[in-house]
Each structure stands twice: as structure tokens, then as C-alpha cells.
Length: 300
Image (cartoon, rainbow, N blue to C red):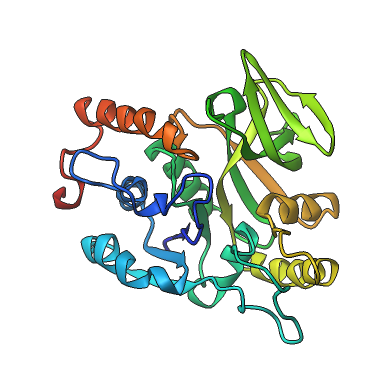
């Protein structure tokens, strides 16, 4: 059974100022996710599930899904009212519930091991091959993985970013992951905001860029965790249900073992409009180096 690629693409792009998952960055108008799909096909994934908002359906079908006929695709919708019975969204809630909710909404479309990725992050073929290989060889509950990147290579020069900061043991298993929502650069230093305090953090620290590998039983854990999250945040319109938080709780409860995978791939992504030139430059380098064709969709 080939693994599935689950693409989280429902974000509203508030810091970017638009739907960055639908913007073109490649020489022929390719989106970042187009390169991930291309690499996923070459790596051995058998299906792509896109998690989007319903208002994006028409444009997503036209600009992405209809261009990828070489792999089966499914659309699922992450909406504020996709909630367990007895719960409603707090008044004033506008943005999606977060990455863990995005994955949970895809549960009806996924029956096989799967990788979860962001639509607006470039991961590279080596990273996807590593995850696909792990998922193809692993079986049983609690067999998860995450690809780690060095923090210094993932921060923006133009504002704060959110990252899951990882700790691992000597055997390469994740021992803790902490979601930091406001990591920023100041000169050559990197820090994060924790309440009213600013705390320095090493650039060599390992972070998750939301390239995860899971098995279907993970959805049961997500469902339980989401109910607990909603109980706690019934009146909080800003609270987000993050994947790293759920995974960390499973690790601390000894309900999951998460392998940390290393990669030779170069990550890049876009948070702010000012990040765009570097992303375009990075893609041009890969195209000129023969890693990707000039027109991605027509490549065999």
C-alpha cells in the first residue's frame, strides 16, 4: 500500500497578505506545492489529499488539481463548523483551527500511512523520499516520524515565525517538541517570545517544518485531543490546535515513538511578501541545475 500525501492548504495567509499557497513562484507559474507533488510522485506516494477551505475549491481545482492527472487526488474541507457534536465555534472566530485540526478533517479520506505537509513550504525530494521510505517499511500504532531542519535555515528576516522546536535522544527518537509561535531574528541572534519574556535560542536547534509521517490510528489520538482542546478553549477565538502539541503529549504519555529523520534537502518557505524573492531565486537555482524541469506539469 503506497503512502498518501496530506497537504494542509487551508491557511488564510494573514502575514503574507493573501493566499500564498495559490501564488506562482516557478518559471512557468508553479506554486510551491506543485514541486512537492512532483517530488511525492517520484518518491512513491500513491495519492494526494488536499485540505482546503470550501471557498478555495474552484481556484484550487483550476490551478492545481486539474494540472496533476498522474496521481489520484482528493479534496477535503477544513471549516470552523467541522466540530464534534456538542461544540460550536466561539463568537468572533475567523481563522482555521490549526494544523492538527487540518489533519483530523482528512480522516475520512485516508486509510493508509500518510505524510502531512504544509502547502507553502518547499521540502525537497530527499526529505519526501525519507518519509515515504519510513512509512512504507513501518507498521503498527505509534510508528511516526518527523523531518528536522536547523532553525537558522528556517527563520525570516522580515518578522516572526512559528516552529516546533525538537529535542531527541541518542537513538534518534523525539523526546519533546515545543511549539514556539513567535521566533524572530535580531541581528545574528535568534530568540522567541514567551509571554512577556524574550529568550535566546541556538540557530543549530532542530525544528519541525510540519513534514510528518503518521499511521491512520493517529486520527483517534487527534479526535480525543481535539475534544479536550475545545473544552479548554470554548471562549477563546484565537486558540490554535497545533500538531506539535498533540505529538508531544503522546510522547510524554509514552503512546508514540517518533523517529527524527535527517535530510540533505534544502528547505525554504514563505511567511511574508518580502520572503518571495529568495523563494523564487531558490527555485530558479534548482531548475537551472536540472533538478526540476522548466515546465513542471508537462514533465514525465
